[in-house]
Figure 1 (cartoon, rainbow, N blue to C red):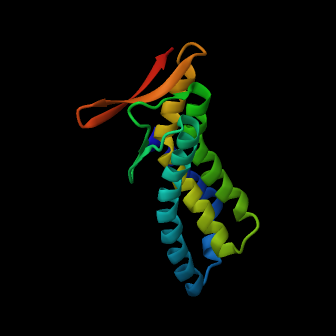
Figure 2: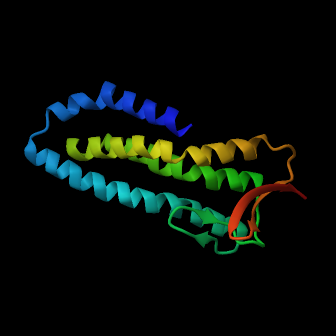
Length: 160
């Protein structure tokens, strides 16, 4: 799924954003690269934080925050709708938010926001996959939790 989304990102870049790059001067390129790396790194942290706060709010327990993931505590769980919200929130807030903001800023920041948004979409592929699995799970009383298996965690859906 990440490969397919990456190809879509590359296609969109060449179709829509390459023309804007042709108008940049050397100073614009320097600003672009600095903004790009700052925004890309901050997006990674913001992505995980946008999982963290809804899970904390819904489960009423502080989740485990790691650089690459946010996990519910072993004795915590959330409902199906709450799980879907916490899975899809980073995509909705960051990717779509960056694209909307890009319509109101200077051209250098505009293209930076759009490229980071396009890179962020494949970063959300696991979130899309788990959202789909959670959505397709049968029943209205499905809850989301993490089960500790040795040193690993596994996402589980269970009925109550």
